[in-house]
Amino acid sequence: MKLVSIEARDLPDAWFQCVYEIIDQGHEYVIDHGSYAGQKRLEFDYVTVRIRYPGVRPLIPDIPASLGIPNPVADGYVEEYLPYLMTPDKQPNEDYTYGERLAGWSCHVSVDGATSGGDPQDGKIENREVNQIEEIIDLYKTKGYGTNQAAMSISAPSDILLGDPPCLRHIDTRIRYGKLHFMVYFRSWDLWSGFPANLGGIQLLKEYMAAEIGVEDGEIIAASKGLHLYDYVWELAQLRTMRTQDASE
Image (cartoon, rainbow, N blue to C red):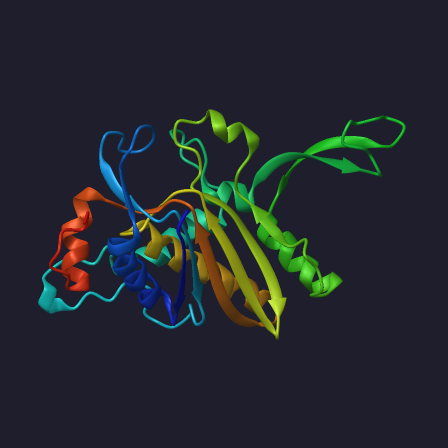
């Protein structure tokens, strides 16, 4: 396994560095199962990306006009994407949304000291929707910043049965040095367009939570064992990084 660590200034810099490094350090393979089965992709074995100032605008990639290639994230898309993260709204044809998991996850919770088994002598178990975003804001405001419990989960055990399970698995949080920081993990992640759009939306979510808590906006540390480039954008990646060699070399 080749572990890659990237230190970036802001979101556009993080995207560019990842695209540049994956050409040299990505593993080329044919997808056996999952999205785009049968196609090739370049993929980091494991990558960690530290973004020190993710709130610097613009949030989307920097594509010089002289290159003549489209930006993988259109102007205004990140703002349009934000409700997908922060509201539980879901279309009938969707198995899940990140917002459903973050802001409206239906689950069994204990009431009056009930155990997870629901022993009536201990109390009772009831079904309710949990808004993890607001619960964590309240946790920090009422219990203080010294906790390791303020993590937001996106995945569920039943996701293994889905044809297209969530790529984003969790957003962990920490308040340190007066700032709210996010630690993000993706099991699989499209580098070309998914990475910048996802992190742009996650950054806006972090800014909202920091303002509600009353702290400054902090860093994003993102990790993935599946950050990849599909073969149909290899040529675009070469153009943006001003490479001349084949992306699969």
